[in-house]
Length: 171
Figure 1 (tube, rainbow, N blue to C red):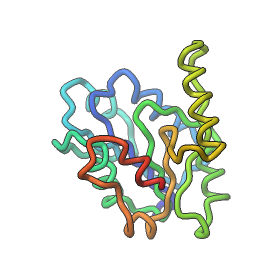
Figure 2: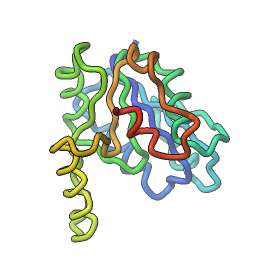
Figure 3: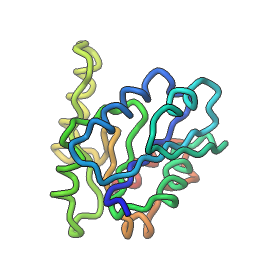
């Protein structure tokens, strides 16, 4: 049974998900599973993910990231759940760091984000969001939410919200 379950909700992410999956499969930690939840996709996202071995995917028609995340977590076998946005690239050592440092004393976590492009406006936006999170002015995530299976079973993502379900989950 894998230690870490990576859950990626995807709705029309054909332009981004390959970079995300490539970063996951390049990880220095190998005891994980990956599940992509294709949510109402009308593009070629499924065609992009199909060549990947050791990847599970399901299709749903919910049009809500919260429902996709919850469905992926229900299928997860790992004790640590890592929810990734489909356009999030992870560093090679992230999963090994999570495995080593995310102990049962924690219920939920996120990590700092680093932009993959050197463009002024996106970098300023990301920097300001990071500052808000660091100063605890806003509880949020940057495309990565880490929790354990027990915590998830107690709170789950709120499916009645059209957006910001990740912020509510983190709180």
